[in-house]
Amino acid sequence: MTSKRELIEPTPGDKRYVRRDDDGRFKEVVDVGRSLAADQRQEAKAKAKPGQGDRGDR
Image 1 (cartoon, rainbow, N blue to C red):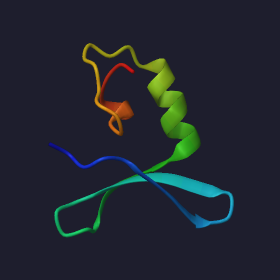
Image 2 (image 1 turned 90 degrees about the vertical axis):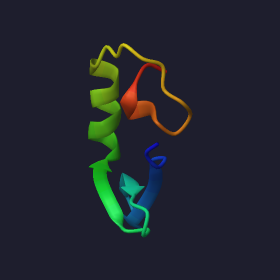
Image 3 (image 1 turned 90 degrees about the horizontal axis):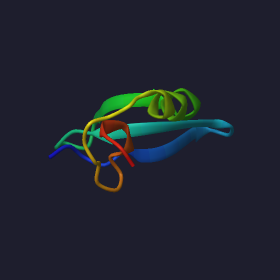
């Protein structure tokens, strides 16, 4: 199972979704606006659990 997406804001107005590996380091970093737009464009085949919105239907 992959880790949940975590919302961080390194500087004011710059929000990002990140996933962490087992050691707590950033594994994947995605800008929020682009991520939400991509989620809406995709037609997924599977339901996603909470926190995994980029990996299936919601």
